[in-house]
Length: 171
Image (cartoon, rainbow, N blue to C red; front, side, top):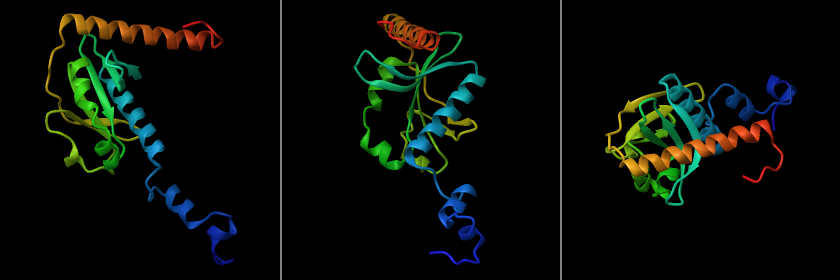
């Protein structure tokens, strides 16, 4: 318990709250993930990409972020907010089948050496991101590209429609 003369205690704020407000305490994993998503989306938008979160793939998996460039390049960004998150989720090799370039995105609090060298790497926080390592290009077959573009377009349209008419719409 705090001392009555301690300004933090007198104000009803504990030491951990002050440390968190000062940025000394890492955010919770869900909050860290949210911040990484936001930073990556902001960075990709500045680069001219359109992005969608949680796009279901033909394989039944769901990509964290799918981004489209003007010249039909499709990238997938797999977000990892901790070492444990990376180690327990080994679905990422299958994402290569659905994109031209595969990236991992993480926060500055995660060791970068855990990520495979044959994928791109993005370092992100809630304000933006930086591509630390470019992803090698593996161009999709035309049929796979068309299928991904159709998935992207249908999900984008459904989400837009849901904003316009949030009631039941049978989609």
